[in-house]
Length: 264
Ligand SMILES: NC(=O)c1ccc[n+]([C@@H]2O[C@H](COP(=O)([O-])OP(=O)(O)OC[C@H]3O[C@@H](n4cnc5c(N)ncnc54)[C@H](OP(=O)(O)O)[C@@H]3O)[C@@H](O)[C@H]2O)c1
Image: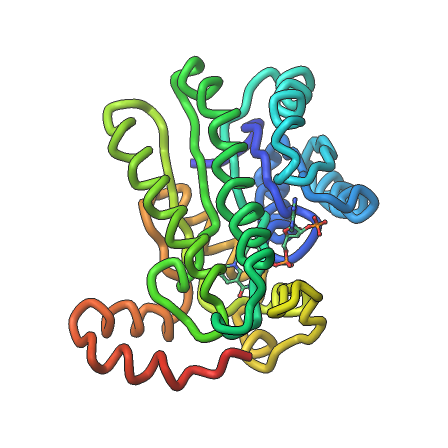
């Protein structure tokens, strides 16, 4: 299966995993909608994609600007007439102990990672159901499966996505609607730099753990492969797979290891 001529809408396409996904879909000559807040950076990504043979629509947006979502959906439909794939990838991480983190930070993370994600899905879903075809991919994380130091709200926002999208899988079991949840371990992107600290300021550092992560390109290739196989849940990275195994089958060992993981 190829995504040639399919309309693929990617949020968080200005950097990291989102940009790498745009490049992967360009190689398959897809029609790509690139969304994130930074319009100028998106234009640079679009130029790279077009060189590879993709047709692009740069559609800058903040996923928490819920009032603009319907208009954004209409802009995509005006340009490409359909939406085959939605990849809800935009997200922000966290570096701060639970006891010290301001409630406003918890709220901001939830707004972007959970409400921003599901709001776009709810705007696109009726169109996919009407066209009797669609694929919705959500970017969760390993911490959407288990807790992790200094990530309480980030982890909670990703756990929440599992509840939402598993429900969608069940509700549309008999429809031609593919739902895929992706759970990467550490991927080498700007995520740690952009993370929010306990007071809501930017962490601003490339963490050691992040720097040693899998490349965004490799991660994107694994995601596209999983999408083609319509895998419900995909865990990316060997360490993560081991931790998921421990949590399921040897919980005491999981909690011991998880408590010692370096947050940075
Ligand atoms: N890197 C990892 O280790 C890792 C592991 C597991 C899961 N993930 C998940 O993968 C996704 C992508 O992260 P990444 O690693 O590629 O990090 P990244 O390089 O920091 O990318 C985050 C993307 O989200 C966009 N974004 C942030 N807030 C937004 C908002 N309010 N509205 C619209 N777009 C917004 C950013 O663009 P603008 O700043 O231009 O808006 C950027 O394109 C996230 O959901 C993250 O939680 C990452």
